Length: 289
Image (tube, rainbow, N blue to C red):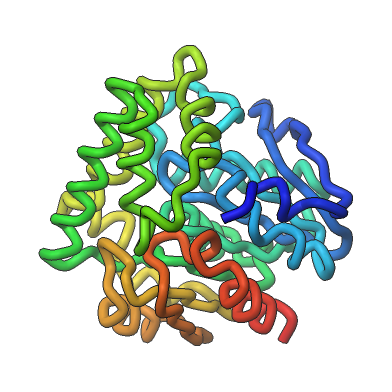
């Protein structure tokens, strides 16, 4: 697999920081037109979408951001609840002009995008829930998410490239094929920042630890809440998604008033990385329809 930077060769893009309500927020952006914001998952960063920015920049002003506490965005002293992530995202939307945006989130990013569409419907034109939806996991899913939590703890508590590779492996259907040394190096450099490890541990406990807790699930991933998602929604799933299988996502999407579903066959929790061409095709067909 080629370097992640090869995917942006010839593309007019930049990395910069935007003040989102006092939070210095890193963004990789390209293109022009209506705003499309990509949101990564727990422990992720803007580079999760390096294989998708160019295709989408032909139609949108693409912002792939580091969410609060992640990547090179500020790490304030907060609890890192879903509300904290939503508040930061809304401030970011305001900072780039305040016009309604297209939102596409993966895993935690999908939850944050969904809650933004619920709480601030006027700010969201269309929504993509990528391998994450407001539905509690089944027993098998809880075991898989507990595994992700343990991998996250190891990566945060004893940072080595092997630990980073093991955490990335949870995201992939074919880790040996999909995880490059460069991707490991990128995430290792993110995690190696001074003061980063305790924040990553805190976020993992808040999110991954919450998903295996009944009370947390009832508050944050109750499918009844999705009845308030008013915008057109794409549930973009995979055959090998850990935590929430296809059948669970199919049940969950019935709560969304205007939803459709696409299932990619050869990826796990990062379809935008493992199957970039099918992902981009399905994603753009929905956004541009």
